[in-house]
Image 1 (cartoon, rainbow over the protein chains, first blue to last red):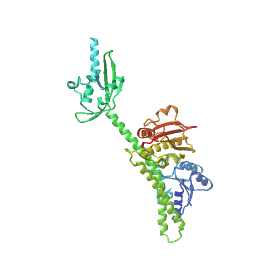
Image 2 (tube, chains in turn yellow, brown):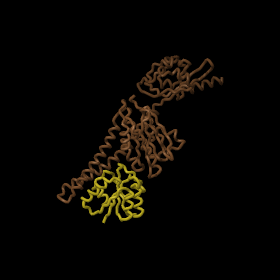
Image 3 (cartoon, rainbow over the protein chains, first blue to last red):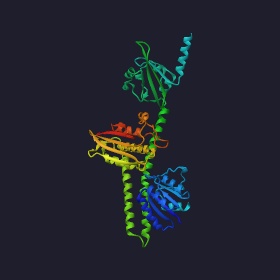
Image 4 (spheres, chains in turn cyan, red):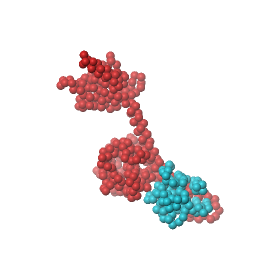
Length: 115
Length: 363
């Protein structure tokens, strides 16, 4: 089963995602982390198939989090969900998909399925 | 014979040179001009030779009498005229740059040599460049604001979709969950409203008249509009002295200056890769003026570059970051428009302090 970690430094984003995704009764299991440092701890203790993360976060940034996640588990998929209209993601950063906020939740689910 | 030949060669060189050349006597009577001068300034040999330069009746943007040209060139051995816009007989307009040099022939006799170039193309290119750079700076600001709008739009959108679907279900939805979705969405709308209000303060034109400047509001607006730049790299400390008064000046422009300083600090901190960046904004009243300080703990400015930091287009940032216009704009606003002062102070142990003194224009 797919297990996905959604990371953002804004609690309101996480709350709204949690609510909506619960209602979708998706097959996928979603968990949520407030910021990069919390996400790193969660990734250490549990196994995820996919990471959906914001880019600009204080402390551990989205790209740093992605690099660390890929290092310990190369097959993990990483989707950047950024507030930037044109997210600056370097070619060599090994990111699987880049989405911009506001992003329709259906589009996010589709992207996850397609990976 | 040889001397005459030399004279001939030199006179031909000057006559056909691509540089406008005019020789004036002590009283600015025109003694000689070359073909280039004839062409650029529409001079005519029969009509204009012997005339006084000050009395030339051509359609020029500068009145040489009013400029005090005679006194200026007497006092300076080299004097450059401001850009001279010349409307020509064929109705075209060109810009000519002219420099006048004093040439002392003997104790009794002196001449002036005016040389010049057609600088129309150069000036047009500079203007185009400047427009491009200001658009780029506005573009950077706009993309930062878009970033800050995207986040609340995202969760309000999620919540509305949730509410729509939840309300169509017959059972199984926790009422508290619905209430939370509504109240969080309202917070999101408040965020959007406060950002658009800052924008409104910012774009409100105040070009001609001075207005009430609420320094607290200005600091809040500048911080909210530059949030995407500093959020990731720095903590913001604001300290506003209780005695801070409202002054009369140009609030939108001061907001813009403050945004530029905050963005500079954030980018400087980012360049060091530190996670413990600090930007401090202080405001206090000094003799009816507002003293604003923006300081950071970034890398600071190397000694040899300090003289140049206020030059337009000067930047130490990597390509693609910043336009090099930031501090030049701050200077134009604070010194040029508000009549205040701007200075750079070295921060300890590292970093920059920019200090703005903004006078009350209401007096």
